[in-house]
Length: 357
Ligand code: F0G
Image (cartoon, rainbow, N blue to C red; front, side, top):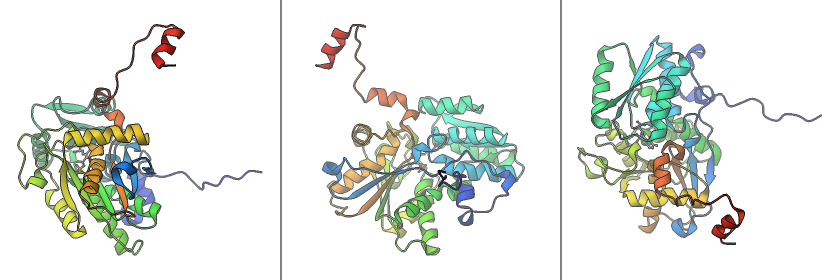
């Protein structure tokens, strides 16, 4: 008789990595099975990146389509454990989608504040369908975050932005997975930087695995901001951030100092890439690698190409890029950046001619 080899299904990041995370009572754990995302070999980009080993941590394959789920399971579970009945966040889209879904699962109310007209359609649709109260603020993400911080101070709602420490705790799990899969840490870890929580979380995760003697090396952390929204690179708040990568359109990141620490302790850097470089990498990943991520996510790969051109990376280096969100989040940009569909009549001869046969 055949035998089943899998001993059990993936139980979500809290249960899988519980020994490395703050304790949560089992009955409060709110999970959608987040984590366990693939690390894909990018094998078709050697003309762009040379003979490095480039791996894509495709976190767009989380339950709501972004890495935010790793932290949201922790933050919402903790809020539930504490008896909270509502969560609130400001968001460029993904955090709001994730908060809405996990709050729905937990039976809690979600209030999400998003900059009006500046979040991708897929993300807005998620927050709406999960039943969050969606508040479109006539202002920026940074304005919305300031308001959320004030509201959470003296109202019965738990803030689930990454200033909530449980968010970054959960997000460390992506670094754990990379180590488990490779058996060591990569030479470099590239990722997009917006509010700067994720680069901080990864660095904490890698350090924790090293302290636990599960790995012996640490990666250099390489963060990339969009050129029109690059406060950390410029060393000053950007009042009117602008970029096609709306997810990282942030002028005053909450985890600014922590991200600088991750950069400096690891011997890495935080640099910027232009919208053109971001969109080039976005198309390249889709067309050559079969991986569809959202524009902000492609900032990591744009960063790799930029660093390779600058001579920073060496052949043989293991480079992991986090692709933070799924391409379906932002259908408008996909359609804008690809060939238009061709209208044909329902006639086989006509179609064959158009196909060029
Ligand atoms: N990539 C995507 C797809 C994101 O949604 C974000 C942040 C980032 C990268 C940057 O990560 O903020 O930890 O440096 N999105 C937040 C949101 C701000 O509201 O969804 P970070």
